[in-house]
Image (cartoon, one colour):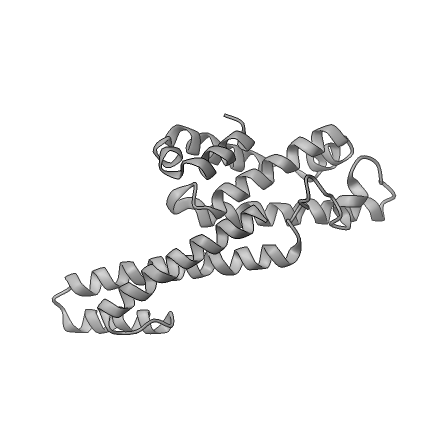
Length: 200
């Protein structure tokens, strides 16, 4: 399945997409392959407009799937990895311009002006920062739910205090019931905001 099709399927039926572990595995392997590209390979792609279009579309689609949680518990790691790779591509383009190589899409990528259907290589720096912040909130809320469950199950008072301390450090109420309610509410809010950003 092409990455664009996968992105559309995730938007239409996330439950069905998440059940298709084969697709997630293939896309995860594709992310590993892409991020393993050398500077020389990236330079060659940026000089070829056709290859560059497909290359950057694929990266953005994988990032979009990860931002929506399409890789399950690996989503944040894959999103961060692909975001760092986007930065690497832009830095490579900047060095190419400095060396006098300006063919293909090199200049536009270097200046973050590469537009495809209204998107840019980083979907604009501001939005990237918003997505990063939301992914951090999502991870924190998931960690609070995990800690609250452990605290409830633990019969060791000291261990319970440790879990509660970690929950407090993450900025949540130390009343376990309230912490779980707040964390679930946070997750729902973040998911809605991520979907809104992705549809802009």
